[in-house]
Length: 397
Ligand code: AMP
Image (cartoon, rainbow, N blue to C red):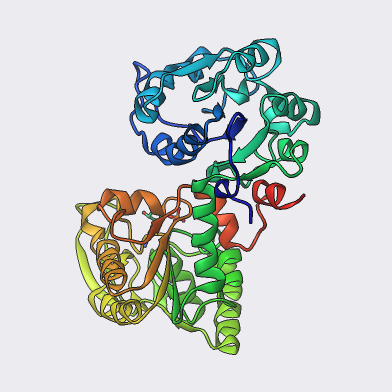
């Protein structure tokens, strides 16, 4: 795997695909700078080698049309501040404007190109557009994990024009290594904690990780499909009746593969989907009509705690309750605390995929786990066992 560490960029122009799809407020101020900070190490490496950096990214969904509200010009100042170098700006990401700006770029300088998605050819993965992008750099560095599952011009197609002059940036390399650690090289026992709302959105992940984990903890709204499938009463809990056969099949496969599956035994049930609802702790398979399970119960958390504290490698995807409501956040907070403790004891823990990161950030766990993935969809697809096109494009010669 070629990473940015394997190259020296002295006197070279590095075209870097970053993910600067950052949120802006009404005055176009960047309200979350995480993604810019995450791209900094790769940019600095190029500059310190004596090269120059050309940054390209998308922002929002302008649908192939220039859109002043989604111009990357708004963030140029913030990028300059974070990188510590005044960043120049090109009003287009291809063509004369971009090529002229690149030609004028000196060693140690940084150029930010206008939003790639102002051109419809970006998302359609157009060859000619990718070739135009490729003219802007001597090297291509992909450091945008968040879009690595898309076969877009700047994330995938452009790589073919840089046969042996392309590599992963630090951030993307870190993501790949973290996933590998969980899926292939992690120390045993390996535990996956899967929560979230629906079993249907996690089926492919479950099927893929059954070959890789020793323990599978199932929580959140998915629980009830498994419980009902086994004959339990789940009341008004979220449940996908048409996925019950699949749930039984997963349990059967897990047994065959020697994976221990841990499903909640008790839950916090509520008489309404609201923070102010009446609640009670009840066995997971004895929920009456009019009640719904919205968080993991105390016995369940004790069980989960034991598994998590004994794990050496942990993957966490999805909350075990409706964490957005304070009354049903305790289970998710407890899981975060157990993972924190396991990590302190030497386990490797990865959190990512979909909205998991929101829960982790809300409760301040981001610094307590080993790695928080920056890519929602890209992480989900990785966990499903798919080869991401943006990653494959760098690996192919
Ligand atoms: P996902 O994006 O699939 O990871 O799902 C996250 C969502 O699952 C969160 O918004 C939670 O509120 C929701 N969730 C977790 N547990 C439950 C539950 N028992 N009932 C309904 N929704 C749940």
